[in-house]
Image (tube, rainbow, N blue to C red; front, side):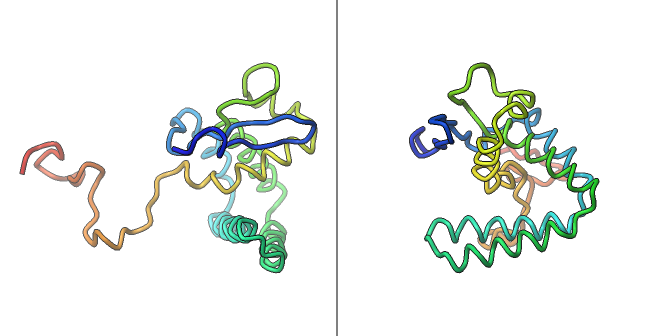
Length: 168
């Protein structure tokens, strides 16, 4: 895991926050994000996620043209949201901030109420900082090209008669 200095988010007003490694987010922390996302159409989630990924990569290399293209893709995707989906996505983003922050310079613990009480520019900066990490909190179902016959974690399939921990 990266050290704290590489996970630090500088925020308006001289404040800061430290991102948590998405792999350490607990199921309890992840559940509010999952619940909120359940009300948003999958194809829209995929469009937004792809645009967010492109935007993050463009920002990393400082490609202004690619940033503008990715931001346009984001707007097009979010324009397709219904009012209820917008509310659900907003709730998911706020829950993701809580789940993905390890510490911050504000008084008190990191809670949903505390996030909702932050000044707008601080909340916006936190949302932008954690958005690229949100997908990493969840199970990666992308096929592994190095393993054409995937199995359950630990090496055994769920239906296997031999436990995964058994010696070969």
